[in-house]
Image (cartoon, rainbow, N blue to C red; front, side, top):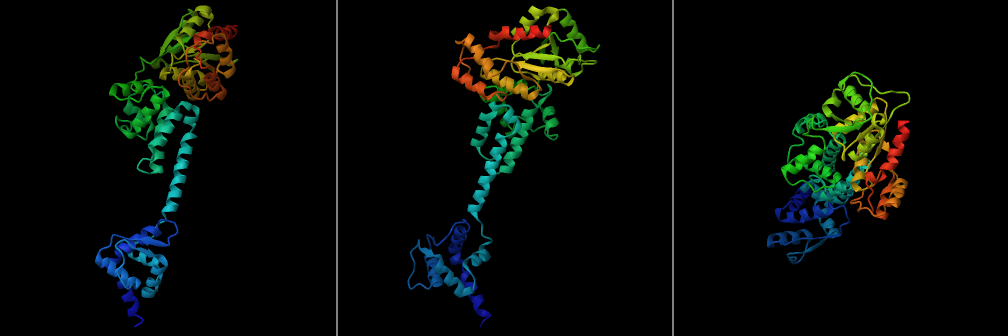
Length: 416
């Protein structure tokens, strides 16, 4: 008798008509929250009869009955000697803990977005804050923090490598993304993510056409070529008989600017700089400043590089080359929203430091020309957080040409 009773009770508990009961109980117990009763239904007549038999009811319950868990525990213990938890685990599988799962998922999401906001590339280029916000708003890829972090890490790897080396998109992708030449193909999730970041940096609308996408890739030094990517220089007098040194020195001695191609910069040949003291190379955003300097100083012009707006692959390559040969780099640009983003980008990509680009410099400039155009979208200046606040306060842009006298005074001192 003692061997047959449990088997009979288990058969009763495993009746098909009771399955809706166990499924509901299993789901509620897996919530991770306290459960005192469950509501079933709608139950058909056979299911209502089975529930009445299990609970010892003298009449059929409603089609949508409430079942107290304490009463269910008594019935299950009497039939099988088990608990309700043991019974539903045996019948339907292990119980979950959705509340704990939700807490863990919330923690993982918070850690993911904190990691993104704190990433070195994002911190160095605060204009990307709008992009990170859009990533957060879009949510997780496939509901997975791990997949999302992998995708974002690849996107940040691409952004850190821009401007690229004027190479085709598949070659660039294969070089930096573990040999996957198709990782940035048109329409891939990674390509869309990177292009949206580039559009944010350049303060343009997200690309909608193939031409828009090609234009953004070109600005990032991808799908460009090493002849059309050029950089303007003046007063650069490297030592050596390599083609780069010869061209730059000949133009400097003639009191003229030089337009150096990425091809020349890639294969400079013999190229050195004077090392005692370390040469200081100034860089500016606008060609007009370079033109003024060359006109004023002629053959005595101190070393000066012009990025012509957003620095392309040639400009970044040259500044890195100069720094590798011991040059100290200083940069100045426009005091407007885009100028701040350009400066942040260049300071992140090279060892250059700001040159007359502080909040104090801005206030002095705006005091002289208080009625300029609006500065446009403002983002943080990593080298001086007060600068953006000052620009927002005055609501006025100061283009580089308006402080040319200040820059030329520094260059006069540098020219000796």
